[in-house]
Amino acid sequence: MAAAARATPATARKALFTTTSTLLSSSLSRTRRGVSCSASAPRIAPQPPDLLRWVQREGGFVHPGLRVVDHPEHGLGVSVAAAEGEIPPGDVLIALSGRLPLRLRRPAAGAADAVLMQLAEQVPEELWAMRLGLRLLQERAQSDSFWWPYIANLPETFTVPIFFPGEDIKNLQYAPLLQQVNKRCRFLLEFENEVKHKLGSVPLEDHPFCGQDVNSSSLGWAMSAASSRAFRLHGEIPMLLPLIDMCNHSFNPNAKIVQEGNVDSPDMLVVAETKIGQNAAVTLNYGCYPNDFFLLDYGFVITSNPHDQVELSYDGTLLDAASMAAGVSSPNFSAPSKWQQDILSQLNLYGEGAILKVSIGGPDIVDGRLLAALRVIIAADPEAVSGHELKTLMSLKEKAPLGPAVEASALRTVLALCTFALQHFHTKIMEDEAILKGEPPLTTELAVQFRLQKKLMLLDVMQNLSRRIKMLSLEKSTV
Image (cartoon, rainbow, N blue to C red; front, side, top):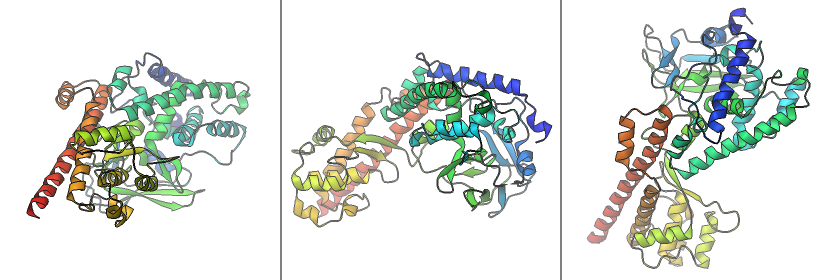
């Protein structure tokens, strides 16, 4: 590797490593003072190598019209140069040769890799980003890493919630996300002890991190880097794709990733799907997810996210209260009859191993399992229900399969659930909007924007359901 690609010496890199550790350790401490993150966080190296040239030098391809641009709102991203003409659909924008993606090495290439894999095997599958993060830390610790030009361009900090000050974690006001944040913080603190115990008896020549200290802070940085930048390709194998991971997200992207080669020698291409004009950012679709996912793993919130939703628990007591508030007579969600229990079991909402997490919002507006359960319990008529397939009962597109009266009661119950969900937030929409107008710190802005989008989504759902209920009453009056 050329000397220019290793411009930051090992000693400086170790200092950077320690700095990041110190920053994150404060966010994981009991006081949770956290770091002050920005959309354009400083990179690992103050003057990192040219990533585009490195990709090209190592056998990759970069369209001559592309540039890496530091956008004031979205941070670093790949854009079409101002002097470049429009790039037509079908053109290859970026191509990575098989050696450029960074992933776990299987099988291990040596004793240090073997130790790393033993640590990775202790990480739960749901925290796969930590496994890949260990590999990233391994390369970051090496003074002559092949991937240093890529690592040097990574952010020094991330805007994911484990970095938030304690007050801004509280500002999220949403229990499902708070549980995930706390779970990740606890894992990092516990995993630090496991790593230190494992590495305590490892000779320096077999140390996967070249003898450097690895703690919850550096582990948190690595997990955040992997979760916010990795792609799961070729059989769901997570890997870091240099330069490609600088393309920002859009639900209507102008480019896509095309996989070629195989798992052992993956070639990755980014191809223009639509015409991309001058100064336009190259965008990819990271996935159709709610804001919980984007904030937890990527550190941003999407306004008017069509896939955002609120999680609820299918709880008989809660549903009885909601249906009573909706004016439904004699609700019996807490004590369904035997035939209703059988249908709830088919919906996986009753019995051993039932999955009681349901949702409101997203493209379906109401979780299909929740909608079917509401219709079945409120109908209380086994003959009427038996004439419909479960798929029909789960779809809001099916207009009143059990009659307008049952449908109106079911939708009013969902309205009541939305009201209950709104009451769980401690602030009102106008208060949130006032905070955002005051230009708060970024972590506060993200937390407030997150909860605000949940509330606005619930209001949209309520308006949608109210229109449907009104239509049902009009149909009923014309019969």
